[in-house]
Image (cartoon, rainbow, N blue to C red; front, side, top):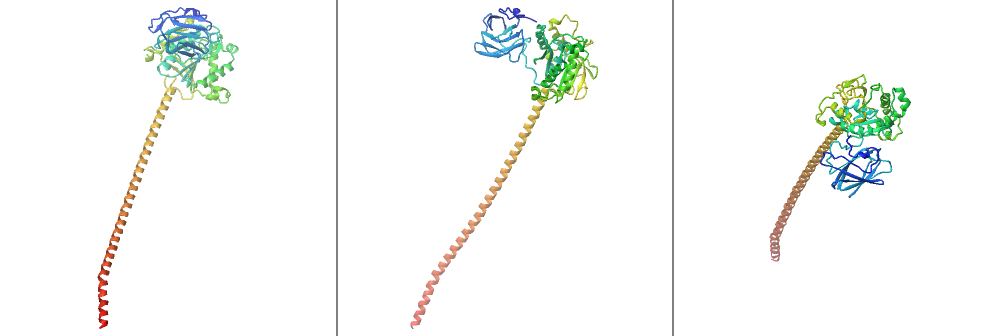
Length: 459
């Protein structure tokens, strides 16, 4: 591991003396400590756009003050944390929490275009396609190292690593090697840990005397329910080369698989109340002899620049510098091959191909399919709505046509009635005129006759 701040390797530093990298965006920091604060500046006076901190103890929330404001950090507990600044600053001040925390390494950059070895971690998975349960830091590489590059980096599956043991109380440097190895292997979701103290056991019974199997099973039960993995992968029941705690991890995992699916087990916990029981669809154990698969780890991976999963895993194991004295190594051909697993449990059928994700639809694909289904439903609803609106429009047009026809009929009827009234009126007028004319013509005649009668009568 390249150290830019050599003095922070063991204790909280008062002065940092980092090395300059070849990256143009990386700046050389100078630091000063005053009480519970550490001030960082670039030696050449350049403005800082991002800072990358590796801590030397478990991380508590802390703050960073810049010229333009305060940034809250550490909420996720990332041991290696990358912090981009909203606006560049000539200096920044790290406000240390009350919890003892010192800086192991610090790097600063002009902007967020940082080298690939800067670890920009995502939080642990909400749901994991694959959950790897590893007894110790480095076991996940030695015995399961091809899974992360093959499935997480290349295939896009969400992989969650769960460690049984912590190394703060025994060999703190291994906490850094753990993250460096996972990052190199292609993992981006931060690992979680049960925080058991690392102690060696030569067999399962000895491990059961050191660790409580019931408590470990309960903790793994909660982890399974938390991450709802579609696939669980863990150690060999025989402990690979006979390591008692590896046997213990496999035994606890097998028990937790059953417990996690049982609604009567630990149903009063917060995680059960939030997510309920979880019946893992598939579980693989390293070197398990039944329903065995041999992963092809020698296919070039585009996501890894053409390297194979085996090559990536070998590079990742080299990050465990403190463990390079061991005789173990990463390979897919020897007796502890990282490519050989057996299907211990399945609810989705047996494998047709040598893939842990056979008969599994990963969560991101499920979400894509669900979005596609919802989009199709939306389009269908839009189509039905358009049809409804078109039917309503046609109905309105029909009703309008009927109304207009009725109005026209009424108008025609009214016109006929009006015409009839006019005819009747005219006829009446004619009759009246005729009658008047008749009267005008008859009355004089009658008068003449009457007058004539009167004259004749006098004679």
